Amino acid sequence: MSLYKQKLQSCGVAWPALSRPDLPFAPTKRVGDVLYVSGQIPEILNDIPYVGKVGAEIDTDTALHCARLCAANIIYWVEQALEGDLDRVVELAKLTVFINAAPGFSAFSQIGNGASEVMNTVFGARGEHARSALGMAGLPANVPVEVEAIFYVR
Picture 1: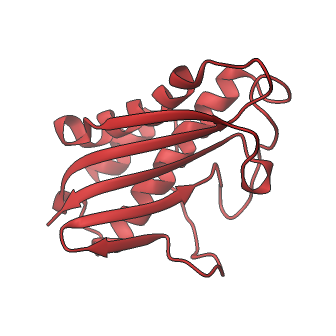
Picture 2: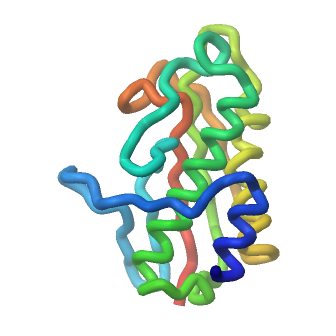
């Protein structure tokens, strides 16, 4: 098992096994040394086990776990884009965390920390990043959390 997979497992998240969705966009897009990762949802083996609004059907601990799953899925697609070599990640530049929030819920940063902590654990200093955490009226498939990322790679 690779060091990256071990670090991800230490965050309480298994290494993802995903397949490219049949959608009109790619999971990643590289432009020069910048790798954009499309918004990832808390999907496990092509199943979406968590749906609902944070602060209503989804509690904070579950939403944190969802953010970790999203981060794991980002790392999976980055590894795919870099032909299995995560050492080619120079640094994570930016995470954007979207939270499907019930009216009155405002702990967006707390939920975003789930994704940030995974990136910091897996990539160390290369995982330090800028971040936005935003509340949304809804997200695709009614998932509680979606996370997108921008990496600088070689």
